[in-house]
Length: 119
Length: 422
Image 1 (tube, rainbow over the protein chains, first blue to last red):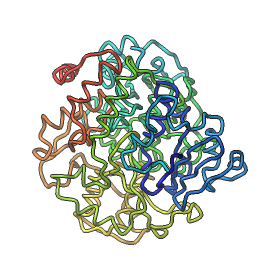
Image 2: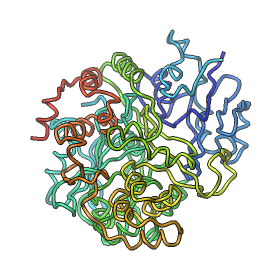
Image 3: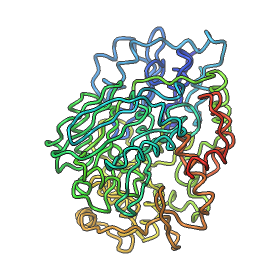
C-alpha cells in the first residue's frame, strides 16, 4: 500500500505538504513533509507531486507517473521529474502512511481535489 | 503571541539601507493580521511606510489561508489601502521569519529586499531597472539559485510611478488595484523576494488541526471562476477560456482552484516540460477576464493582454476595463495598447454600475453589498483567508472564528473584527 497521485487532478494547493508536515512536527511548514509539490517551472505551469517512500520516490508527473529509486533523482536535470527543486525531499522522512499516528494518510484525507489515493 | 506567527517585525529604512528588528508584541496587541499591520502603519506614518504582513491563519491548512497583505498610502485616494498577497506569496511571507515588514523612506538607487529564514538583505537592483516583472522574477531566482522564491515586483509602470501600476506576484500580476506598485516605484523598491522555510505553532495544535480539517472537508473544491463569480453574471467566462485551458490552479491552502492557466503559444494539452519556455498565462483575475470577455475580446487575445499587463506591472482589472472597449487580436497591437494605457479608478466588477473605492480597493454595490463586502475583507485580512472564498460562501466567518482559540489562544467574534477597524 502506498500513496499515489493523479497529477492532473492536483491544483497545487500544498495542503498535502502541510498535513504531512503536521504529522511529523505537530506544526505547520513546508520543510519536513514526505510529500511535496514540484513547481520549479512555473512559467510552463509544469507541476506535479512527489512522494518519498523507504524504497523510492513516486513522481506524479503531469505527463505520466513514475517510480524512481532513491538517489536517481539527483542525476536528473530540471524538468525531468522534479529536478533540483525536488532534491530536498531526499533528506526527509519517508512516508509511513501516518501509521505512527494511528491515522489514515493525512495527505489523502485533506486533498480537496481527490488527487491522492492509496493503492 | 507566539503561536501562528514567526519572528519579529522587520524595519527597513531605504534611505540608509539599514534594517532593524523589533518585537511583534506591541503591534500584535492591536489584533492579528491587518489589525497589527494598521498599527504599524500608524506608528510609522511619518515615513510613508509600506507594510507587508499576513493574517492569523495564513500558511496553515485552514481553507483559503493563503492571504497576506501590502498596506500603504494609495496614490489614487491619498488614504491607507490594502492589496493582497495571494498564491504562495502570503504563506512565504508568513514563513519568511518576520511577522511583518515595514519599509520606510525611499532609496537613492533601485534596490530589492530579500527575506529568507529570518535574514533580511537590501540588495542593489540597478541591474533590474527597466526590466518587466517576468524578467525581474527570472533574474532574482537565477541570482539566488532558487526557483521557488516568491517575487513581488514592479515593472516599467511602477518604476514610472504611474497611477495604473500594480505590483506583480511572480509572473502573474496581482489584486493590487490601489497602485501600491506605484508606491514601490516611488521608493525605488524594485522587488521584495521571499522564501519561507519557517514553522508555525498552534496554541492547541491537535484541536486546531482537526477543526481545520473539518472545515476543509466541507469546503467546495470548485475549478474555474464560477465559484467566485456566482451572482456576477454567470460562468460564461469559464466557457470562454475553456479551449485554452491547460490546468486550474489553487492559491496556497485553497480548496477552490479559481486561477486558470491558459496556453496560447503551444497546445493547451501539452503536459511535458519540453515545450516552449513561455506557453501562456495564469489568469488570476476573474474581474479582468470578465471585462475583456464582456468587451468582445477573444480568449487568446485576452490572455495575451493580461500577460502584457502583468509584464508591465499594470493593474489587471483597471487595465482590462480600459482595453475592453476596443477588442484587438494582433499580439503587437495588444502590447502597444497596453503600453498606452492611462488608468482609471473606475474599475470594479464589470457590472455597469457605480464603482466605489475604499481601503480594500474598488467594489460594486449592490452585487457585493457594502456590509457584506467589508465584512469579508476585514475578516479575510485579519484571519489571512481569501475574501473571495468568503464571499462565495466557501467557508463561513463564524466557523473560522472558532479556530482563533486553538490557533493562538485569542477569542474573536464578528463584532470584535469590526471593532479592530473602528
